[in-house]
Length: 611
Image 1 (cartoon, one colour):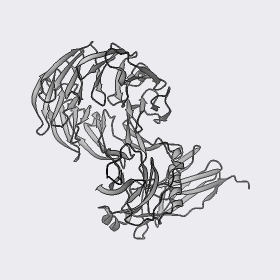
Image 2 (image 1 turned 180 degrees about the vertical axis):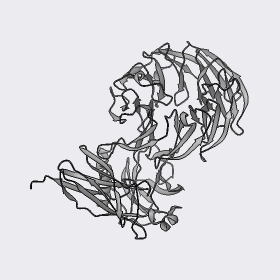
Image 3 (image 1 turned 90 degrees about the vertical axis):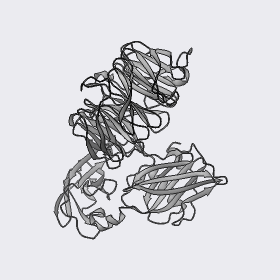
Image 4 (image 1 turned 135 degrees about the horizontal axis):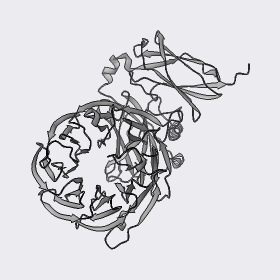
C-alpha cells in the first residue's frame, strides 16, 4: 500500500483508556503490546487474528508510530495525527516511526554513512557518520538489526556499532588483519578470518571467544582466503583453507574433520534444500559436502576462473560467477548438475537475490543483469533483463571490495545498488527499465550497501513487530493503520523501562530547552541564537560543550555551528540567514543523549531589510 493511498483510509477510533490495547472490527482482532527487551529498547508488537477463531492473519502491511501521549484522541485528532506523520512534517514528528528504513554504506574513507532515504534535514539525508578509525573490509548485521559488526584490518579489530544510537559500542581486538566475516544462523557467534587464522566473537557479549583457530591444510601463517558456511542448526562451521574445507564443532571450536577439496577454494555456500555445503575453487571445481555426514557427495567441473557463489533463497539454484570466462553457471542443488551457462560481459563478480530474480553485477559494466529464477531450469532459455546500475563501471573505483554491492530493500521486489565508481546508491524496483531514484553518498566511495529495516515485519504468522529505542518510559499514543480491511486506531499504552528510575535521579536525562531569541530577523544580518538548557531538577545545565545548532531552509541553505556556554545554562551561536524565507532551527547534544528529533525546534522568519 502506497503512502499516498493512506490519506484516504477510513477511521475507526474507540473510546480510549489505559487498557485500550485491543481493536476488534469486521471480524478482525488487533492486539498491541510494548515489551522492554534491553535498556531502552522496546519491542512493539501487533498480533492480528480472526476475532472468532483466533487464527493468525498473514501477509498484511500495517503501519504505526509511537508518540508521547498528550490527550485522549478523538476521531478527528487521530486522523490529523496520521496525516501529519505520513506527510513527514517537521512540525509533527513521532518519538518512533515504525515504517521506515535507513541505508548504510561502508566507505573507503573508514566511515559508515547512515542515510535516510525519505526525510533529511536541510536537504541532507545524512543522518549520521560512524568513524571507524580505519578502512572497513567486511560487515554484517545481526538478525535483530541492533548491532552492525565491521572488520577493520589496519586496527586488528572488529568494531560493534549500535544501530539505534549510531555509536561504537565495542571494539574487539582479534588476529592480524581481519577481513571476511560470517554470522552463524542462530546469530550466536561471529566468525572472522584473519591472517593468523580464524577468530570467533560472542555476538551477545560482543567479546572474543576464541582466537587463532588454524584449519588444517593451511601452510604456516600465510594469508588464507578463508570463507565460511554453517549447518542449518549452527552445530558445525565449515571453513575454507588453502586446499581443503575444515569442519569445526561450534560447541567446542576445534576441527573435527578435514575434507580435502582442491587448490584455492574461493567461496563456500550452504543450500538448505540439499543440506550440503558447496566449495567453489579457482580451477573451476565445485565440491559438494554433505552437511550431516561431512563426506564428499560429488564434484562438479566448470571452467577455471571461479570467483564467487550464492544460492537463491529457497536453496535450489546456485549461481557460480566466473569473471575470467565472462560466464555465470547455474547449479541445480537437487541434482548437483550445471543446468545453465550464461554469458555476462564485463567480468561478473557479485550476485544477490530477491524472491524472483538473481542480480548479477559485472565489474566492467555499469549495467546490472537480472535473471528470472523461474526460467533457469535445464532446457529453457533463461529470461535476462538489464538496467543501468550507475553511470560508470565499478572497475573504475579504487579497488575491489568484499561486501555485497546489491541488496534487497525492505519493500518486496526492490533492491539497492551501490556503485563505488560514481559514489552513488541506486534504488530499483523490479519491472522498471531504470532505477527509480538515487541517493548521494556525499563524495564517499561505497564498498557495500545495507538496509536497516525499522518497518513492522511479520516475525511469525499474524505477528507484526519491530524494536525501537525510547528516550524514557511513560504513556504513549500509538496510531495504527491497516489498509485491508481498512481501519485506524490510536492505541493508548503505558510502558515502564528499567532505566526510568535512574533517569529520574539524573537531572541530565531530562532536558528542557528554553528559547531566548526572537523568531524574526533580517536576511543577511547576524542572528544571535540563544537558548537555556535546564535539567529535570530545574537547575541550569552548565558547560555542555557539544550543543550543536542546525539552521536551514529546505533545499536552499543549511548551517551547523556549536553554541558556546555563556553562563547560567545559557548557550549562544551566531548564524546569518543569507536570504529571506522561513528557517528551521534544531538542536542536538551527544553528551546529553539528545538528537535533533528529541529536542524542541523553532521556526524563524527572515525578511528583507528595507530600512
